[in-house]
Image (cartoon, rainbow, N blue to C red; front, side):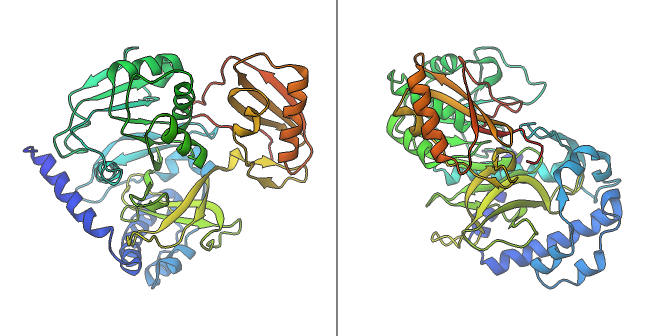
Length: 440
């Protein structure tokens, strides 16, 4: 494209196309330099970090050593003391551009200030995600998601002439359509896709799952070449459903409103590559020690280019599995999979947390279930919310209770509830497991 901002964005992409192949050592040295710069700024301008041991961080000869001198930032501190994280001044050339709020799906809303530098990086990584997904920009895309607060779309959605602005998509592109999930039912989304007939779809995994189920009973009037998922965890069952019923492969992006892009699915496999040029990702155990490849742990995030609200080793409340170097050859660190939010773990009677391995296949052998949610309300009690195609008999409920009880590692009292729909959370995201027990 001829616009100057497009040329600048494209030049940025050429640099990212090179940096993804740098060695792990090269990338860590780059991160260490930017971490020290960010830490110096935070210690000088941000009240929360005034006591940061900057001398020890400056002397660190490795990324791991530097991080070891920085305390972990709990999410609730950011949620309850937002002003303590705002920088009094910004480096020359940077300016404040607005605010970003978390979706609220965790029950806590955090708010950060952002800068032009932060947005520049996020725009570049958004384009990289589409390139890695192999998207043909001459074909159309539909975006079905909850829009940002204050964004009002008509019920029929909106059409734009291009995928996005030249600062995000610095090449010629086809039309895009946007639909707000807050104002549309599944049937309305299904019918809308049949009218606009996009080549690509970007949406939440829970929406995609519903569309795939609908495709089993009604032939789609649209043909997708690919789906990009955001905002929720993706499992192998969903990937298979999308491939078999919608003939569309899933390409997933792991991101957070207050951070931006964190990790993007590898073009060659289903691992995720950390966007290490812009963020440091640690996966640690309960004591803050790094997990070995294959180990699951807490996700700590350090975005390197938001100087308005620096976040160092921010515990976002997610769990992920550490990955090995990817066979594709990229030096960017890997995450095998995003397990989910800590609040999506169930608590055992002794207070220990675990991830339930559940899918709709558990129910389908007994009764067709369109959607389900487990809500733990006490250490020994779980509410089972179900959306079924047909009324459920006492005998079917007893069988479902037995199947579910045998799949759980502890005895729970199960309360079944049957509803017409289970709404998504405040951020437009749907969670199959919710832990409302205080110990979680």
